[in-house]
Length: 90
Image (cartoon, rainbow, N blue to C red; front, side):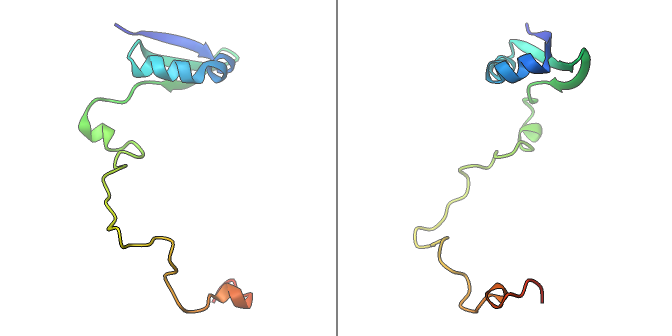
């Protein structure tokens, strides 16, 4: 089973990706990051509960399908913009 590790902020900065991998693999249950001996952060793996995972940024990535005829780079308006007349607010 995993363990709790206490790591200085300097070590965390130097080994961040390895630490994240270990937490992800559940080798470590939690990592306490310290600065001058004082805890400033705690890193824990996300809950496996589906509702918790849904709150993670990017969990819907790949779930939106755009029709092939939609051009997201095409202009959305033919009207001139106020900024063209040096107007910031109207």
